[in-house]
Length: 388
Image (tube, rainbow, N blue to C red; front, top):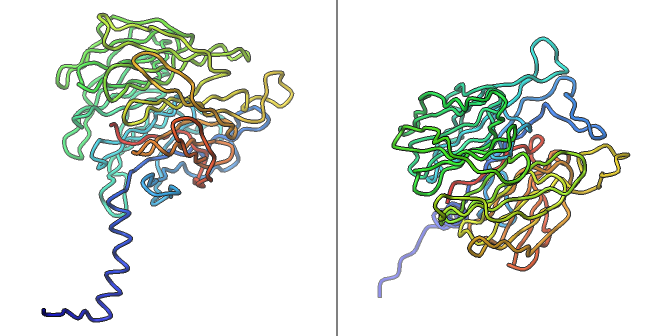
């Protein structure tokens, strides 16, 4: 038998490269859009003096603990649902919206912005390759499974912007006018087959049903009505159910999430679940078996407010058909925004504005356990992984 003798230099190189290959094979990209223009001072959102630029952190959720593997600058905003980030299914392209910017006439005020940044995730290092315009208050953004179409909800003008995608070229393709400038379109999400998109409207409490035919998107004029101020929406990868968070009236009352039966004809809201003060974000596990809900719980209120709590909540619900059952809850930081799941559904992360970090939890199907934190380069305002 012939023996092969490797030079020591080649052995050292192979040992050095092996961990990198392992990490690359298991990598799962998440993006955290970080707002540095907003600071919570005793329950009041204020603009700090000379704020640093907003940033985007690129995070690998495929390792334990998750870690930041990249950073770049792009407009971001804590105003609006935390689905202000969208990643293509092949993790090659990302879109980030910036709903508000510092007022050029008054550095202590914010005004609506229309920014949409296009990020190439495959270049080394990842970079913003285009800065586009959506509409005033550009908030929730989604990319269809085919990677050919993106929609942006424009909260401050009552429209939805349509963009076509060809490779890494993103092109504006018009707007859908909802006929109500105060509709407050907040987030829009595609069904897995790409033929329908659901749009939350926290200004007039509707959930619009948009029809999608190729690159043509129209308002079907059909809508659902569930909770007060529908905000974030997540659609299961199985296409059978959607979960919507509802912001409520902001008085300290218990607010709700609603469940949409997507298989019903017509699709309709079939359940409402009380979750506590101000559910902010929703994130479904890749297999559609669980949904994570971020709840403000009064953590963003003045300390003297009777509804103040010195912690937010991360809640996890199991999904069986259209039945949701709470299976886990954990205390988290303050003014927390988005959540995301690892591919194996065993790790959940939540981003918190005040702490400027991701808080990491392990999940065993029955309970959540805190396992650490990941620092961010600003207040975590938007968080997303690729669509399942």
